[in-house]
Image 1 (tube, helix red, strand yellow):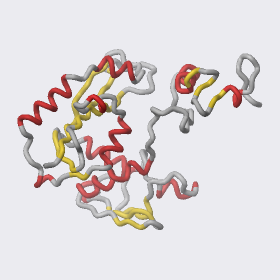
Image 2 (image 1 turned 45 degrees about the horizontal axis):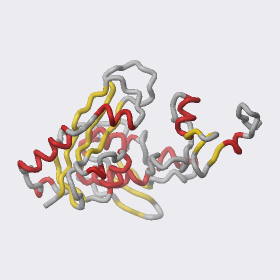
Image 3 (image 1 turned 180 degrees about the vertical axis):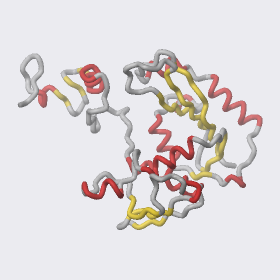
Image 4 (image 1 turned 90 degrees about the vertical axis):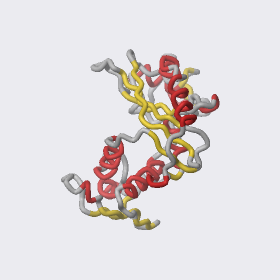
Length: 247
């Protein structure tokens, strides 16, 4: 049965795909009001500020982590990615000794998704994320980055709420044009850069340290939380890492 709005109109007539609105109201806000969250709604392209990233955007991260762990990933356009589990991870019983045919592609046949699809929830990618999260790295240099980028974790100190989002990462840069960069935009930005090997990292200069501190000081947390329409009652910001342009 076709869902109808209060006036009896068909929902497919009420929804304007071009503007991303329901009866003139923003689609995201409408679904949030109806469901309390947006996790079960497929937005497609109804709103410009929705994340424009998907599984393939995680591939550079995965390759960099494997390189960091001393593993070479084999590439095959037809067969996918192949890699041996890093030595330091072999105590993890959820991991296999070797993986083949891995892809960052949702369009796999249903029977292959459990073994070949790399995404959040796959044991190997989850371990890669936890590995990086456990490392206390405060600064680093990357090639093709024009200005310093600071990543800040923001979480609600009040727990036990009904909110569906409890923690986010804010990317911060000093120039005004990047002051409202979204997390997915930072992911795209970093995917276009190249890490500098640890042995080639130039030390942090005093001027660079002051720029990083100024970026953090200029963060108006209440304003950013309001802009993102997050239900945080007592937001707390914790700097994670400062990424600097390579010399």
